[in-house]
Length: 119
Ligand code: SF4
Image (cartoon, rainbow, N blue to C red; front, side, top):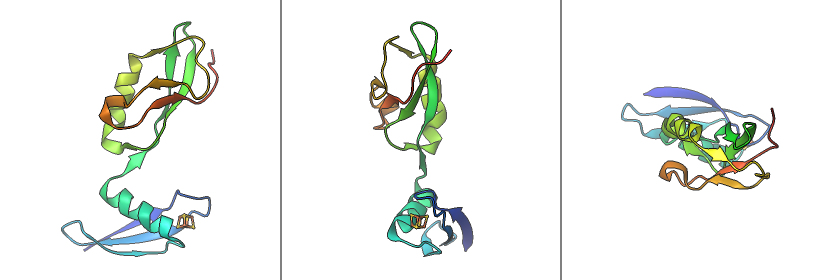
């Protein structure tokens, strides 16, 4: 049996969640969450963790444009997505909310502009 401690990141309360797993990786207990969303988060984090990708892409005019994924990307795919974005050039006039890449590497996540281009 394995125990894992998590901090729930779903809301600012940040509950400490204890997850108990069998030697085969089955979740046998979840404690410490104050709501169902915390349980859902803990299950996902222990079985198929995902993260929102935040980074920058280069614009046609050379400036860096902040972008983020529209939904969580499996952790094991984040590095590949970062590599893919190195070869992407966004339009100089890209606006917040514009999609830069659709369904990046088949993950189901779009990469969207999240801020104004900087130097
Ligand atoms: S378990 Fe519920 S209340 Fe606690 S941090 Fe997660 S979402 Fe917030």
